[in-house]
Image (cartoon, rainbow, N blue to C red; front, side):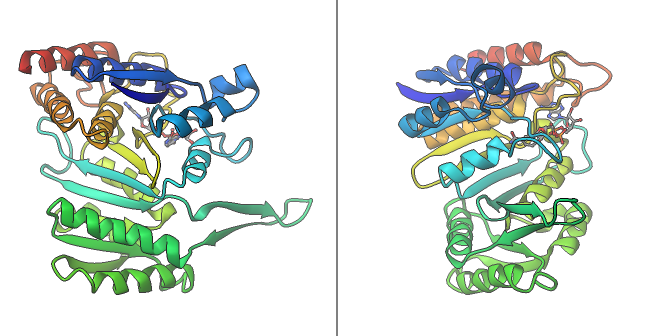
Length: 339
Ligand code: NAD
């Protein structure tokens, strides 16, 4: 029996997290869920988007499954997602984007992994208006040698363990000569130590174009925080959208699993959200909990339901679709049939 913190999240969060919990239960893994609220619902209840009860639960369980949390744009409270990553030093944001048969998308057979640095640079929270009149603002991006070393080494170790062939470091060291330059210098140093892995680096603007033109040339991509955030949504677009791409935030002592996508306020409460991204994040979590067989079964059931195309959400089949709940039921049925 595992104990896992469950943060349902905002917008579509509660519906898709419920789907993930049901599917993990149907896979037969014994999990005691500690359900705690963060984000908008926590503001209503505790007047705090990240109440102590959430931090205490993750400190105890060390593992959380989290629905997306809304962050006000341009003003208001700071991102709870970023706060959680910093609080637990979850320095790795692992975002695998792979194609599923049956998904209408520009490419088939894409299989990329983005390893995003998750605690530094422009997400360090050092920003302010420079004067009371708000005539100018500045954000300071901090990149450290130790922070860069640990994420780049993680990417190479991950590539080696997963039998992947190449690591591409993405940067903007032509313009950001210090932050980008340090990250690039360290990636070249570390790359030289992994002679079994092909190493290359690309400037981020060219990288975005190259990913769109020919994603097959990439394998593991390691980059700084902001570029990793943007390129992982781009990678989601290559494989058929945000509804399919999971993510893991991993540190030395704790890990939080979530979808790459956000709270999707435009479709919240409409039974339209694709549950697959958080379900696949749940499978990543099960692997972390050494429940690899259950993770494989869940991934297979998701892939089969998508391939069949009869019980999928609107993002996957706009003309003939079912709702979140119905797709969840179809995955559970397939999971049980395969047991
Ligand atoms: P979003 O990812 O929520 O939505 C972008 C588009 O993708 C929308 O059209 C949405 O309907 C669609 N979409 C997203 N998930 C989907 C799913 N599962 N099924 C079908 N369609 C889906 O991005 P946004 O609108 O830019 O952000 C909304 C809020 O989410 C913001 O407050 C943002 O800060 C937050 N956010 C949170 C996280 C997180 O919790 N880790 C990540 C990204 C964004």
